[in-house]
Length: 536
Image (tube, rainbow, N blue to C red; front, side, top):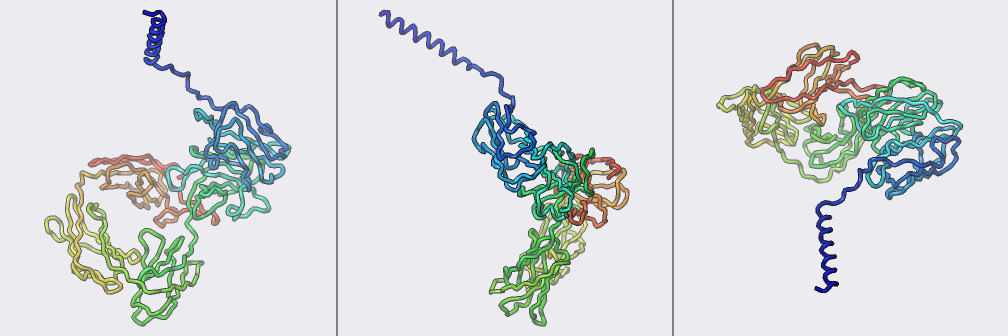
C-alpha cells in the first residue's frame, strides 16, 4: 500500500475513534451562576447629600437587565414628572436615571427598584436595591412599619402602595384625591408587610391604596383603600395594621334609555335601595308601572302600560342627596315577549327554595293552576312569596332526600304587566341522598355577637351562611363535599350584612376573622371548636 495512503487511513481511523469517544458523553459546564450582580460604583455615590444634579449612573460588574420597572420602581417622595430609566429593554452594565422634576429642598429621596434588576444571563435578582440622596445637608433616617390585611378576603392584594401625608397647614382630608403623598412604599408582589424609610420627624396621616392606575391618588370606583384611625407621630416604635377595603360608590345615575316598547333602563352607581324614579309627564287614568332590577348589572327597568302616545317622557331620579331630571326619547320599539324560567334546574337541596321568574313584571298569580308532585305522585303543599324588585315568585315546600318533584304550571297561572299569560310549563327538580352530603358543627368560644358565620370557597364566594346573635352551636347540614374557608363577620350594627368602610367619614370596615380551611366529605361530620382572640 502506498505510504501516503496508509498514513491518510491511519489519521481517519484515529479521528473516528476520537469522534466516537466524544459522542459517548458531552463535557459538562461548571456550576450554575447563582451570584447576583454587584454594584461597582454610583455617580453620585449612594446616600449623597446636597444633591443638585439631574442624572444618576449606577455601574455593575456584569450585564444586567431591568424588568417591570413601571410596577417595581417606587420613588419616595413621588415625582410629578417621572424620571427616565435606561436601559429600558436591552442589557447594559449600568443604569442611568435622568431626573426631569424640580426637586424639593431639604428632602430625602429614595429610588426602590424592587425586584426589577437581574443579571442578563441567569436572571439572578439584585433584590430591593435602593438609591437614596438628599437635597439637604443630611439623610432622613426614620421609618414607619406595619402590615397590610384585607377587610373581607383572606389574603390582601399584591402591589399595595402605602404612604404618608404630612399634616401641616396645607393638609385636609381631600388631599388623598388630589396630591401625591410625602412618602410612599409598596408591598410589591410577595410581602404583606411594609416599611416606609428615610422619613423626617413629624406628624403624618398613614394610608394604603391598591392603586389601579398607579397615580398615588384615590379613585373610589377603582381603588381599595386603608387608613389609620389617628395621625401618627414620627419617630415611632409602633407597628401599624391597615385593612384594605372597597368603598361603596357614591350614588349617581346615568341618562336613561328607551330599550324596548314600554321599557326604559336607568343605569346607576352606588346604592339603589333609596333610588326613586318618578314620571313627570302626563299619563292616562289607567296608567300603571313597575320597576325591576337587572339580574347582573347596576340597572333598574321602568315598565309602564298602556302605551303613551308621545315623543318623549320626563323623569325625576332622586336618592338621598341626589336629584336630577331626564328626558327620554321614545321612538317606536317592539315590546319584549314573556318568558318564564325556574331556578335551580336539575338538582335542588332539601333546604333550598324554587324561584320562578319572568322577563316582564308579573301582575297576577293564580295558585290554583300550579301543582307540585313528588315521585310517588303525592301532591306537595307549598307557600309562595313575591319579590317585586327581582320579579321572582319563591316557592317553599318540604323536600325529602332522593326524591323527584314535578312542578306543573297550567295556562294563565301568571299574568304580566301587558296582560300576557303563560302557556303550560313543566319544571322538574331532584334531591340527592343525604349520604352524598357532609355536615359540620361549630362551637364558638369568646365570640362577640352578633356574627355572620360563612363558609367560602377559594375565590371568596359565600357558599353557606348562618346569622347568630347569641352563643350557640352552629350546625351546617347538607354541605356539598369540598374545601371551605371559615369566615366570621362581626356585625357591629346588627343589620345582617357586611358593612365596608368610608375614608371621608372615618369609618373602618366591620371586623372579619378567618379560620383554617376545612374539608367536607360525603356522609361525614366535621366538629370544630373555634377560639376567638380577645380583641375580636
